[in-house]
Image (cartoon, rainbow, N blue to C red; front, top):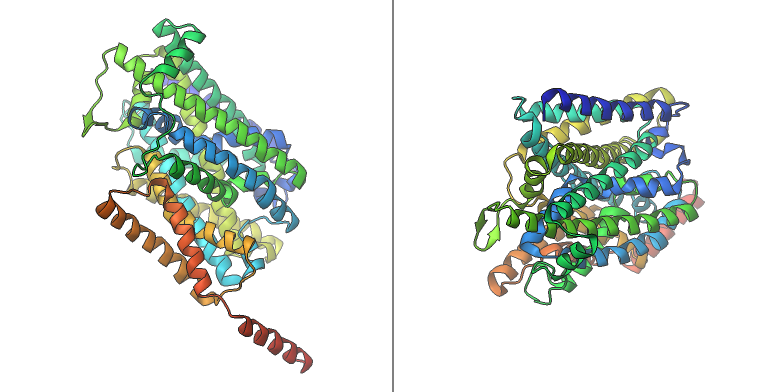
Length: 501
């Protein structure tokens, strides 16, 4: 692809986003960046969340992973469906009833300020690394496909992408993102369809023949019943459920869009509709995964393997689209990468800005003239952190989607434990010990996983999040206040009030 054509595509795409941003930025208020004025159409939000839920990681990692893990990821997808039901009928009504902007305010209401700050801090760490790793993969693809040929250093590409996102989101934030993400989700789905049809035509299949070939392929194994395997059905299903609750229902970047919908009833519709969209899209990715390995085999494309496993599976889909699918395939893939990058990263940056502004800067109680300054300062800080994390992980290898879920198991586990304890118990904590309990749970999860691998050849896999949440709940019950402590506190408060203190 010529540099001129590349520049025209990027300029045209970004121009569309800026037009949408200008329209959405009319009549903004102090809180528009954070809550979108709570006026977003629920169906538009649901469709736009596809891009946020998929990202460039899913775009290349899910199809690429099929070569090593068959279709076992579908077990994970089944678990996510149950997770979305929990989000729709348990979490969403609570968020609306409490009129939350930062969803971690729930922890303040339920437990207190220390627990609130702890939960939000774990989110900030989790989201910073998760978003940065998604951005990392996108930048690597863009570098490999285009910018290396123009001799543009990768750190410049990172800076340019972050600046572009800032340009169309800095004024109205989540209000703009709701609309731009819907457009980007459309582009993303179109790219997958083009890729599938390109491979189908290249292999000379009809639609029915393609479906039969996918179903009967050696990689088309859906269920893994080996209890010691990291892709065991029960591990994958439970992990899908818990990771969905944690990475969607307890994730500010995903729920912030849902909370821009007018009311709780429409928000439920949004979550349930999105669950169908995302499950369908991810299943398409799995089918595409079998097709790209079929295509590579037919065209004699050799893949590097070590110990019976393919190496750098994230590289296969970009390799085919850029070198074998023709100019249309390459252009479509470029647009898909840009769409998935912007759609997933813009909402993450907005969420990190929202969480830090509300949970640590108390922006909701600041005077009008200070709010914009705080928001802009935090937004700049978030972008700097993202840049530094991407630079630190630039030389990482393997399927990045596995790295993201592994990190999430350690960082979202305590958040999940806090919320489950709050929702399904009536205990109170000795709050000063909450950070210790959460950090200890993550640390002991890491120790236990290593012990089970060495002693029993049993890998927790994505189940890290379950073990971590369980340990968090256990430690929280250890530091709970006894009933007489609570009674004494209530008595003292009543006594002080009666004395006018």
